[in-house]
Length: 259
Image (cartoon, rainbow, N blue to C red):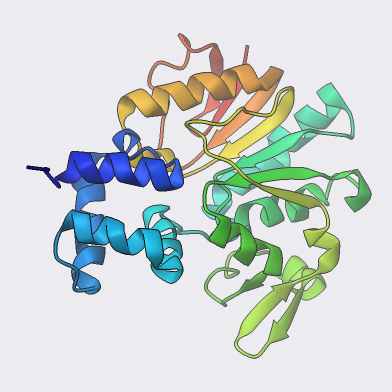
């Protein structure tokens, strides 16, 4: 008799989405998925999998639910001040004007668009190009539209709000001149190849949902992806305990340099 347990669900989800649920903290992820199944009033993982295979809307909603999208512009503004005051000038001095910057797990685009605006204080816009990747094609689609609520843009400096956002009803649309500086791609941090020769990688508040093993693997891959003296910018909820062993030096709690 077939067993339709969480192990079965993980296997089926991987076959359908190439998202490996083994890399996520099990209790947390199982609780999220069970809540979603209950919301749809579906009985059992087997029936849920059947539904995912035939119901496109549910499949998209499931992937969106799975990839935890909590995002806002200039999240933790004090860290962006360090980026602006110390990190960008040092990178430009070291590598010149054409920096290779990767926003990994970029969610709805708040982060890469923040990077463009912040960097525009140091470089002309036409020198700026950000690679932005996420596992979830729905959030990439939202990012490309570039429409945000007031809460999302609350921490954007006023001069940028005035210059680069247009109010549309209760929402705010980011300008095409900022959007054009970001190239969005679908990519899975645990499976796909990483860009190489990056001068700055920004990956914030995503890896907290990963197991320690998966986290370490990603940090090691980021190190290989960075040019020597390139910088990794992580979230306020994260830290790299064994950073020296991975080939990093530490600028401060949230910025690490590839040695």
